[in-house]
Image 1 (cartoon, one colour):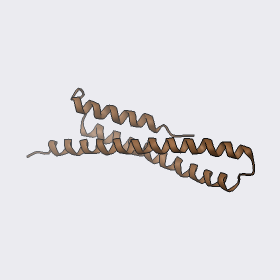
Image 2 (image 1 turned 90 degrees about the horizontal axis):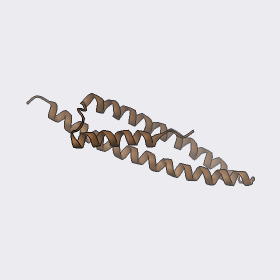
Image 3 (image 1 turned 120 degrees about the vertical axis):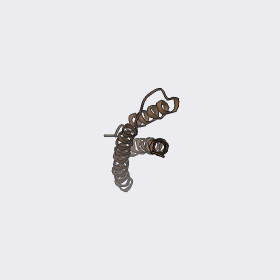
Length: 110
């Protein structure tokens, strides 16, 4: 089963948008919680990708059944989409992390 990486990305994007327009009073702790949750989802995505790649290798090694060819194509397409979703999540997390660092630096006493 594929992890829901896209939902995690949407939460990070929404938090970044709230920070950008100053509409919400989001604290450093809330950002840290979202970063932790986001990185956990990214790691789940990475684990799924590792398992999918292992299965792809198994299917490539054994193409004796037509069903394997169908599974191979479907899994390759799903893997490609998941790779894109995990990459997008990591990009958004990096941007949120920059916001986190900026807020922490501004929160320090002079």
